[in-house]
Length: 364
Image 1 (spheres, one colour):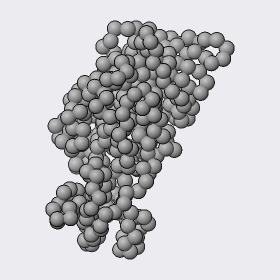
Image 2 (cartoon, rainbow, N blue to C red):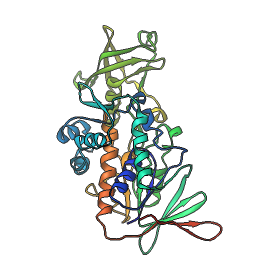
Image 3 (cartoon, one colour):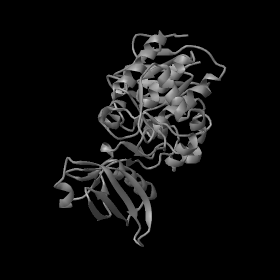
Image 4 (cartoon, rainbow, N blue to C red):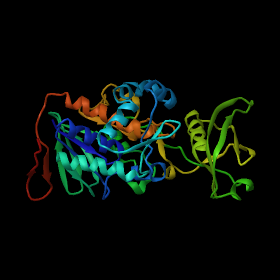
């Protein structure tokens, strides 16, 4: 069994760890110098990796793409993710609302745990290795083209993330690979991000955080469309924080153009008309990606290119704040690897150098 995993973020690392633990030969390829750059930023560096709730509640909370994500979440539910991290002897902390963190509050604890497993299991990792393209072979399998050599593999998992926070390596290249191979890409938009206003009562409090905030999205007719309690942060550009992020996600998914955002914080109740989201490059998640119509939800395999799989934010899936997006990355990665591991072909990965002949790599 051979897998080339493109992308060393949450989905890619979990795919590699899953392959290693199932003794499935695989290679992890990351364009940046280290793995997990965006994971290290999650929850302000604390890594809210899941939420301790049932699969049904998780799927309900995600809302958009709920039917499609159901097979993956049922196979790898939040409580299995918690069980997995506990099996690594990582002390965990559960918040009153179910959000789960490493007890030391450091995302690096999670990233280092992944790295330790890969080293212990001998799964190879290539860093500083941007992928340039993917070519399917007529007889099956693929050639993954990097800047310096080609890699042949039976299966490829694209786990490159979205297009937000490009400095972490999420530059939208996975969507470009998928498009080149005939997949539809839905529009990429910012998700879970602040909204802009120059209201003086907000900007005067820039830098302040209010834990007991609340935000509502209200229709032009005065109907409450969405209501979320959580923190509200005042920024120089306007508003951020969990309550704002989740309202913004709702607004973006629904394509609302005319709405009122009603916000409570610090005994203030303010109303804003048609606020604008901050840019995609600053977003926590990317809304949009590889169309779910082109991917089998039971396997994560492309319906257009056999042997090609997708995991994580490269897909048109996203969740609210609270550990949902890392859980989606882990669950889809696990689903892809499980399907590949059940296949029949065994073998090695081959590195074909552009210059100087061929170098064969094998890890069984």
